[in-house]
Length: 463
Image (cartoon, rainbow, N blue to C red; front, side, top):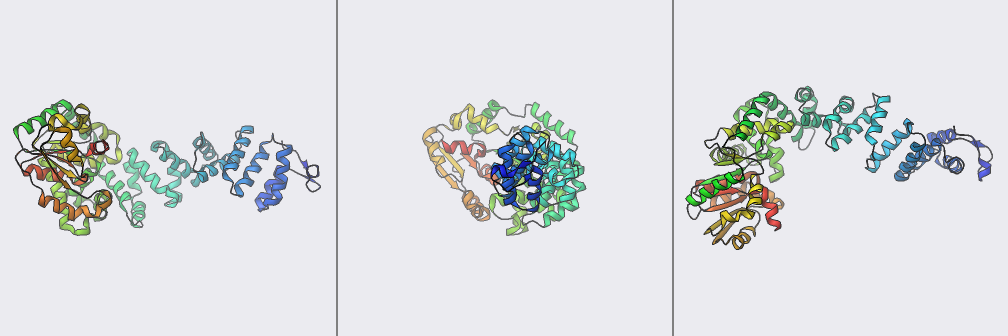
């Protein structure tokens, strides 16, 4: 127990004081008086946890957070279960942006003693979400979200955790609050995206979708690296029009937007959010900026490109099973892909694996009389010409990320208008993001062979 200290023995005013006196001075905001007492206590009673707690409070009040956190550590080393110190320690970690080992455990201990503390519950939940521990975060976020609402991202953390863990029914129970939240945002995409994802997921028979995906992956129509290489080699040898597409999560949202049944099932706000959650990142404006008809047309072109593709590489059963927040969108895309005339598919790593087996696809491209490229890298085709001993190259530049507003509609329409295939079976490499499948389909329609290399573009351009 802390003992009273005679301040006069340490150069202070006559009388005695304890750590409790110092705490009361801190409560009143009398920092200078508290500092005098605490200095004496630190010198005379360094083995008392209450001394270091008072020191930590003083340093925190003066904005010296790092030193205050160290004082908390000294107090906890002497008295590990002193709750007020753990609370201050937690607050300082929030201020400093660090997360010392055991911080989440200490916060849970605090919450066990004060189960109605929504602010503390949200801090625990937010910390766990930041680490990707969404399931572990849910119990605390269930405490925080109803009390704090939008404050300190409590509701958003809660909605995200539910979406990621597949808590669809619970998420939809908060739909009115999330809609209100979304309408207050400048870009209200994410709340609506979570809501639509939940509604889509519940509309599908999850187990049936997973069984269908797994069955396709076990079948001969799911190409491994060697089979995909053989398929491409045959198309090139026969000069046969051909397209290989790479589809990702963003394409799944565009496909969802393209379904008339979805426009009937969901509100205009919801559908706009689904498509623009990826469209604005790619092109810097909402898809409706140029009118409803062009928006509908480009999505129709994308869906047609998928339907006409010879091989589609897309996320497989493992992704569908694990990524609850994307399941509904991926299931929509899978339905379109598996309904194509061609049944050939491959995994999302198909082109990367092909590159590992045959760097830069050299055995496929070697000594071709022509190689076309559609993308934002102006030098890639020429580098491949030297490496693969290609005769002639042509590059159709599309604006890169820095000029994304120039990409659609102006750049897109211009590229489609000037794109030419010089001879049947001419090979083109395409790396054009969301619009890549449409360029691939146009090349195929003109008699060429289009290979979507989006997933390896960064690696190729570094070489």
